[in-house]
Image (cartoon, rainbow, N blue to C red; front, side, top):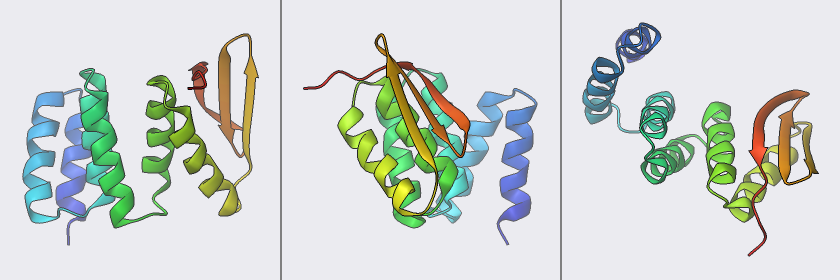
Length: 130
């Protein structure tokens, strides 16, 4: 059962011990490589360090393991938008809408606000069209 070990990694993160959380997540993923929650959390670690490409890679792997894992999908959309990759982000927004979620996008004066069921999960620079 991976839950106790994964919960330990969450505890490290909540204690702001990022180094210990990341070290434990990497060890955890050696045993449970398809665990979407661990991939999501590791992605957030990389994003916090400014390595968005690695974060996106982990989020994609989380969704490959469990396409319905909502935290990974929302984080992927958010990071893609912050990187200016709106086209790929839109594909994931459409998938959420297809799954029955109320997805809304409002763009005004170069700012994009994305919400899911009336909860904002991205409020930042709008990606520019290619």
